[in-house]
Image 1: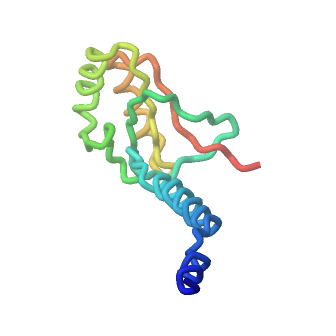
Image 2 (image 1 turned 135 degrees about the horizontal axis):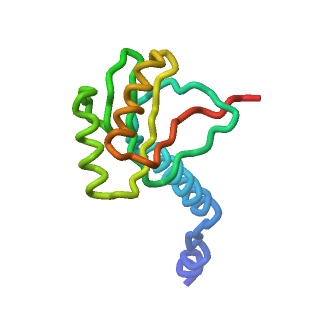
Image 3 (image 1 turned 180 degrees about the vertical axis):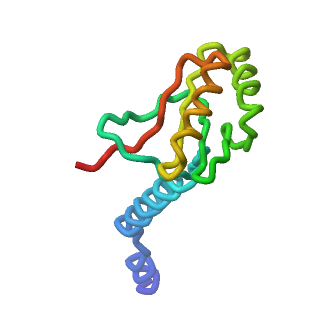
Length: 136
């Protein structure tokens, strides 16, 4: 009879505090890891700084002029002669498209003006020039 009483008294206890700590740790881990899984769909360029820079709108088409003068339409490199045709095709699909011209700070000014001219000739009316916000 005495053996039975000892077994009943030594029942294991469930410790909930360490389990809650582990659950919160896993929650924070998965939240932080999802932040690094977001893909950037732009070409990395060193943008010049401007005091009146704004963040770009949600739906826009990026046209990037790289430091060596090459032109990239979204993720596709294009010769300057085909840029006007490509913009026209994009405007036929969506006439209210917003174009963001991103020029590297080391690119020659004339190259950016040539791309801007091609955009205007293609019929683009909503054009923004990208810049980084200047630190004060």
